[in-house]
Length: 598
Image 1 (cartoon, rainbow, N blue to C red):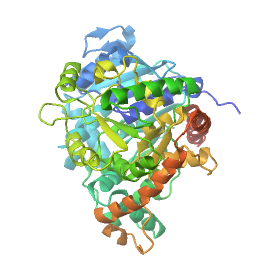
Image 2: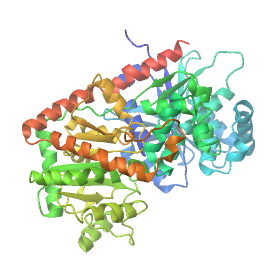
Image 3: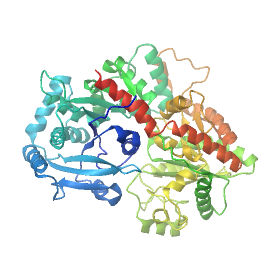
Image 4: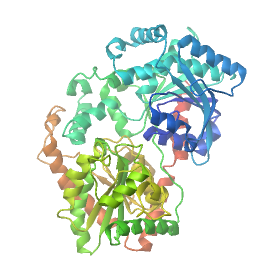
């Protein structure tokens, strides 16, 4: 049955103006897919703009961002039709804000979407105070207690002008045209509150509203902040759900946490989407409205472009050459871990597996190199600094913490995890490339001149991503269609999608480390029993269970070109069933249709 066209989808996100991280990657894949563009007539991205963040402002106008500014009182541009320009100026004058309206191209096909951004940091007090009073009066949002938190106020202040601008740029649409607002994460909810505030009383709402949960911030915080991490939290959650207990009962009152306070009001939306099966459980664990309302799974997609063996070998050769230029020898295998340098990515688990794998590789007379491509500062280092450090102390093999090289979490990771690993392991070498970009210009003269980021993804034999908190895990899955092994933890949301895509049979390219199942002598009779799981217990489970992961990796690593071709075939078969087009046609559009039929 053909899908009826959707006149308008408005997405509220902090990455409306430019791609920054995870949700930007989601928007790139989702909005750039052919299935989406064949069905959705008009897409508008809405979000706030911090004009005092010079990195964000530069990224906004960078040619790679493909943003065409049509109207911006921030940049002094006005190429908008007079009627629209007049409406935007009226909003700016009445609310004391500055607006930007333009068009961006997303995805490989360059799908064009509209963009509305607002600088609301000087917003009129009466506008935002009335709005906050409405949110408190109707849903008990504790605005007076939270308004001193900059991030919370940043998104609340932007809500009224963003919705007003949405109304202005869609004034040309037929009044009866079906419209959706999707709030991507908690920070998109204030725009939905504004839409509800301005909905005509005693009349059908003009906008269907959706809360799309890409994570549960409360769960993330509880996982990251305790040494028991995912082992503790998910055991408490599992038993808690079975026994009818909720998160506040088990972990204590979380209402002080501003993100939690906002998420608890997501029930005002017409529908709830979750990016993974674990996120559904986490929302249920919050109780309240989440305990009984439907929650639709709308997974992330996986890159599924076919990669020929010849292309794989070409990229792999560049990676092997880079390893040889750095280390003086040509390894047998290339491993990678591409990620943000944040605690949830659990980089230490790479070494848990590698500690076992080192001996297994040695028995076969083989060696491997792990490239950890991660940085705590995505703005990157200047090429001139990279070239100097390369000459002075062999960057990226060596690093220093006193000259702008190592920043944030990179310092303890390098000195406390990566370097000590080399003291007594000889078949695996790990290299931290703490730089944004994967070219000679960005990474030094020892990188082959022809190297690109695509070679990093296509040329690897294995991608690590054994996170302690991972609602989905796009990065872990990106090299799958290039025939790489994907090694994840059992809390990664992508495991559910792989299970559905393979009818529960799995695929040898996809290896799951179980770090939450407790030893047989542990009995968790109540969720509070799980709170005794500490860092020592979790570490013991990691050491024991990572051995099985290493054994699977050793069995599945390719020994020849025939093995590589089999891995390419299997990876592309599964990736095709997890593509963005599949996400749109089998998950997103059916979920939107259910809302429209109500």
